[in-house]
Image (cartoon, rainbow, N blue to C red):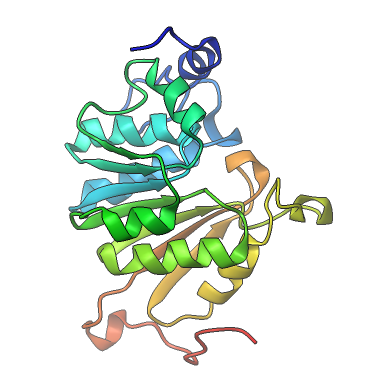
Length: 222
């Protein structure tokens, strides 16, 4: 282990003051940043068997690692920024001891890694529509029925957030997913840094009529 990174320590100390309950939410950040990931992730893993995929490490990693410990799941992490991974590894507990960390592009990640069934996915890597769509399309076949994929940066509050260094064009994927009949899609406009947090449920192919989604089968917007 290299010398501890002070920025990573500050982040870990600030976020990891968990409340005394089974839901993983920072006592400091709560809704303002990734507390919603802790709450919704807890719900998903409580009722769904499968492991976790994270594209883009950061604050979210601490929440997902803690949830993985609670529910005895494995996480597959992917990020192209090796320095971020290295700095976070200086703090024991940010990454789980048995989790896989893949420091290469996500396209290679999905080609080279042998995944177990996935119950929870979190995509917060490249904010370009073309790449985030590829990440989603690569992850969806790995998901179990009623598994959830969470997307960040899906609801920019203002035009200035459309910069590739902020929300980019992730919102275009949200708009498309909202039209699909094989998915349930809901977006929280606030929280998660106030730029949108979308949860997408993979619907089972076989369901009784009273559980099916109705409406036109418009898969992609023009």
